[in-house]
Amino acid sequence: MPHRARPMTGLLVFMGVNLVLLSTITPVYDFVCFHPYWDRRVPPPSPRSFFSDYMRKCL
Image 1 (tube, helix red, strand yellow):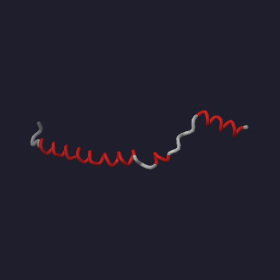
Image 2 (cartoon, helix red, strand yellow):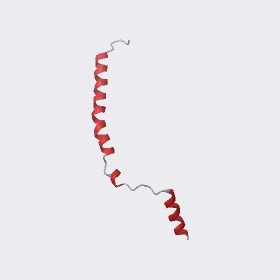
Image 3 (tube, one colour):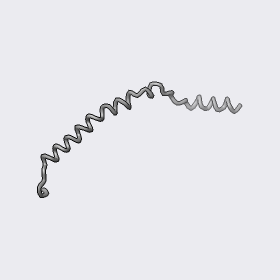
Image 4 (cartoon, helix red, strand yellow):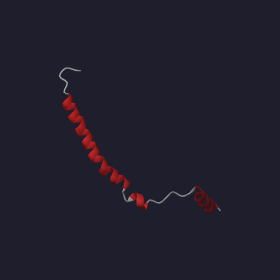
């Protein structure tokens, strides 16, 4: 063990950092998962409809 090691201080700092990270992950998760963008997003076209639209424009 290094000279003048302070395991209790290290443990408290480690637990404090974890507490801060844990308390900030919930709002970020809620923002990403429940953002209105996901509700109004248009699904990508299927390859079959893309091909038929392409052929219709060419002919």
